[in-house]
Length: 153
Image 1 (cartoon, rainbow, N blue to C red):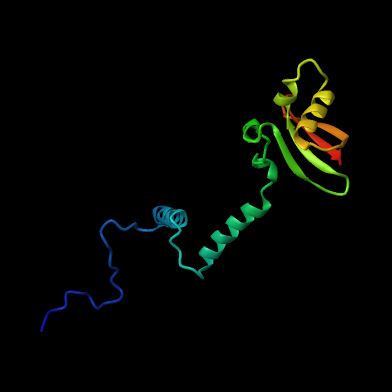
Image 2: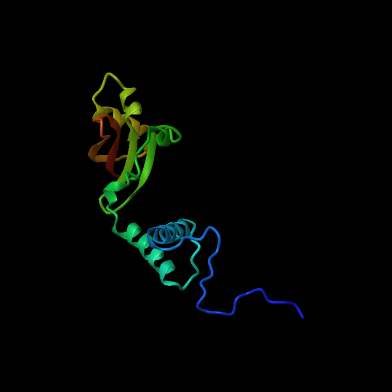
């Protein structure tokens, strides 16, 4: 029979080498352990710690202001280059909407933008039309990127 070297007296404290004795060091170790488990997401599903982390993530997603993220879509000239400076955006009750690149309009240097847009539309549409409105698209640096043109056919 093997001899048991373990003490059976419950009043004798067992100490492990390297283990904190308690007090501030023990509290600090618990805090570091909790932070480590939180960062590496090592809590089991269904525990209150896991639920608290998920709640914090959802709160950040749904409660953070939109102004923190400048991810609004912007019109880039490269998008228009592939369409040779003329894009049909669709139609509605008011008429057909087109997007015309400002560089294409500026290539008709001798005329006003309205006249250049009229020429560009007549070359593209090949049918009679009436221009209802022309709205310039301006970026934050006050540079005209293009024009939104509303046309009635």
